[in-house]
Image (tube, rainbow, N blue to C red):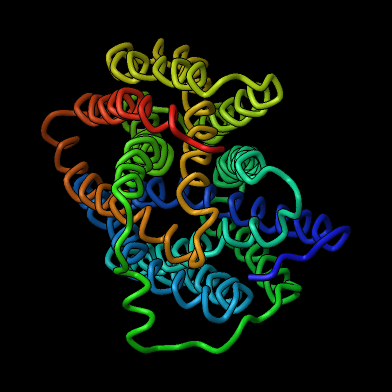
Length: 387
């Protein structure tokens, strides 16, 4: 794809940053709201895991194809598509309260997420200009994290003061704004869609061993992060620590904002990737100890924030090293994250049953194990990374 230059590049990058932050705000708010809403309706935790698992499985199926289509037609149409899917998901949450209809809504959320992530990093590359791509992606990741924290904070307060329905109406209004911004994008079309063997070949083309090694690393670093914020922590804080909705929102927001803040600080300090990897490792014992300490475990959030912030930076650098020189950036990124979505689906599908029989500790241990493996396996690929 052609990249705009000069001021148009910077203005496009700034507009895109607003879109990313607004998307992250809405997505994070829903990640807190939905499991709590299901608990409010007395849905068994095992079923909550099953319902939420519809999100990553739809993401897995849809994302790679949307990414490959984006490499043909450009990103604007995909942006409009994921914005409409977001509106559809929230409308279902508003209109229906039966748990099974929530499965349809979480499926729509998965489609929304697949559309956003199919093009998110590709759009950044398009408007990146002469900036370092790894630094730009890491900056976008950190700013999304800030918006993520604000979304969790706001939705907790909204649920407490205007109930679930009021919070959903607020998110619906923000989603309309997101759609308008997507339709106003100045990204140029790059051609027509080719629904033929060309698309399939692009998805299943041979890739080097380093690419598949990176897919495993991406799965290991993002699985704990995604499951903590979208599943484990909301349920744990409510059902085990008996926190109210406002408290949960504030707690998760503080963790998310501290994660973003630590990442921004360490980027500004220009720490080496090996030191970032070492700091990521601090999260491993913190995750193991967290469910064993009860309310005192909240003190470990400072360590978790540092570790996850550093992991975010490393994850983006690994991604750039694999796909920035690709001719099919969106497709390759979609394939890169496929194992992650399979892992998320299995974690959610089985996780609810594990909580019902053995509590939360085993799932926190799995999250710690995932991060530990990332630290061990990440040393070799970082030593050869070009970015």
